[in-house]
Length: 258
Image (tube, one colour):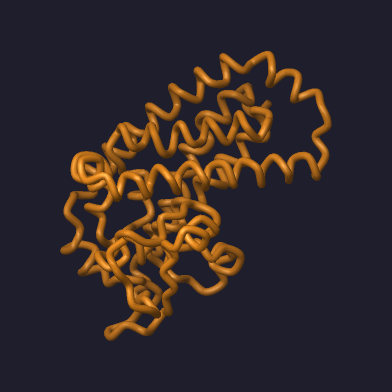
């Protein structure tokens, strides 16, 4: 319990608060031109949607996410009570986290890739997210509402159910997943960022996917790159200094339409 809130309520709303707080940190760092993957000018000119519209879209997705989370916690309340009283050792929690990460990655890879290859779904649903040609932190969850439900909300529900984690453990898992997702879209390559050290699936990796040449590569999100490597959609890249300051992710091999 914290401030009189149940684990279920914290599991529902903590990731939303974390999303905006962590995004706010990156907003305050946005003027660090020497660490940006795209210039501020490109962010303002290349993106096809206003930031006000992005905020509204994210809030809508988070509202749907909260409703589904409350329903999920309500339906699984008896099982959650039993799991809360079971072995919560570090090994058990670690295995639940890893399981949830793999489940979420697997669900999102195949749904994400299908939305790129199905022309109808891409045109009418997934292209909304790609209006952000130059990603930024609080645009991470800017999606068509149906995509937000299918990829993020249902994917999250599956990772919770199949991992067997408790509502209390879910507070930390989904807050971590939220931070990781925001970081992948932040558009900054900051020195000392531990996500860049421990994850090959990171800010630059996902930035490649948002560019026209990488549109059918680097589908994996938000943790690992295994499905891209296994199924031939992995696009390696190098980070090079960009004229005028900052960095640019460039593919290191020829790419083709797949």
